[in-house]
Length: 282
Image (tube, rainbow, N blue to C red; front, side, top):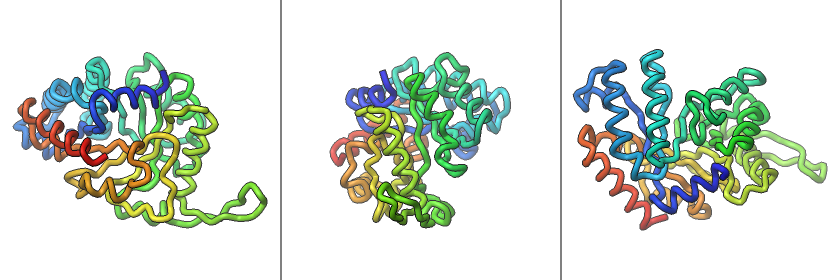
């Protein structure tokens, strides 16, 4: 089964919500945990036990595990494996982007069946050129995994690159001017079309609070939309920003759910409230 089909099945069964597992130092402290691998493990196991059997998608942020060294990576492996075992689709938020053999090495770590950190999908950065992502795209297609490509992010610094305009030659020999984000979205769309995958296993990352004016957000695959809650995005924003592509949207929230911990019942209740609210709007 392709990643796109697995994602659609999970969303149909569990609702349209991705919950980030982001063990910020401030959250560890708020939960009464130590800022070390022991506290990290307790945090992650609590989040997985409460959420991974109930929500469609979980998204561990690799950086907050990596900061604890080898012991943190061990916790990340456990988090990915136990979340998948509980039936959640796992998007590993690593935002990798490199070229040639180095990019291929990342795919060996994250996208190959049986890899130590094998996830259902990863986030990647296209800003070394979209074709630099070819090892990720080809490996994902071969192994039935997915890739989410950064396109239009909500951080203020992103606009200097993502909204810059480029002029390219079109099929008829003329020229067309698009933003860099528009070029990325077009490349994702072409990748899904070439694969003949009706569900789309290559997605794009578009922030919940961005202005997508002039961009075609229908990439033929899912749109991972971070920024709900703590970053200021609301379910109502999704209807406004993504009005034409709502069935493709996978909203993601992290701190607004995780702040309900460390009690697992409260964590699940916070996620369920947001999922139900999204269900009435999307």
